[in-house]
Length: 163
Length: 107
Image (cartoon, rainbow over all chains, first blue to last red; front, side, top):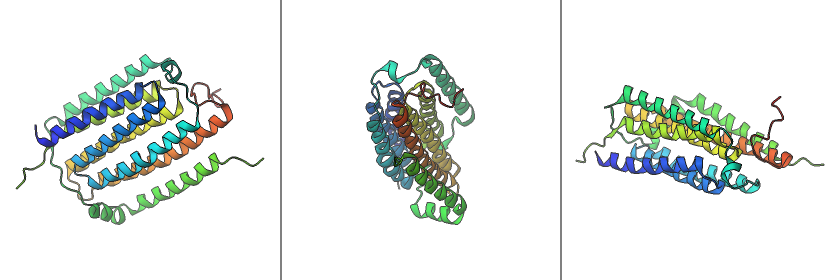
């Protein structure tokens, strides 16, 4: 096992455990904190895969912005604490579907890619910027419009109407 | 000369599969709308891990996988903004964000 694989395995175990705790915890605020752990380990995985820019984007946008947004909405809404209040009656069925998806994916992955190795080459931010603004400029513009529309839509939805 | 960094592709894909399955379980089993949104974020992250892993595996000259992971992050930010605005609006009108009780459009 190479050092990269050792570091990756440690991160992946932490991230997977935090993800499982996120979907089973009984306290919504703990759930948000477990989400932070999972997102940070995903950022670490990006670093191990030498996707440096994406790792920092992950930290700034996910851990910085999206989790704060989720925490704010948890504080603005009153959520009861406890398993019965947070989970519905289909827990067993949901666990079955999740396990089936996991089993199917793991079977396909080992069937198709076992023995394949990644040799991560460093991706510079310059290369990503060149690629976005040279080859993917139309998708970039579309995504910008989408983000603007979502921003305006969120403000219009959440605004309290004057009586 | 540093040894070439190597990591097995199935390891990364298995991590992403675990995140995705946990997200599916969360979406199906949770009642609280904010927790469902968190589970959706988990699934989107699993997709991003796959995109980056395959981008590095295929040695794509355009780094298309990483660029599309950035786009997915942007769309996720838009989605969570709209989703939370809707959740807060539902809470303001119905005093609950329990997904089982929000059935205005159901029948």
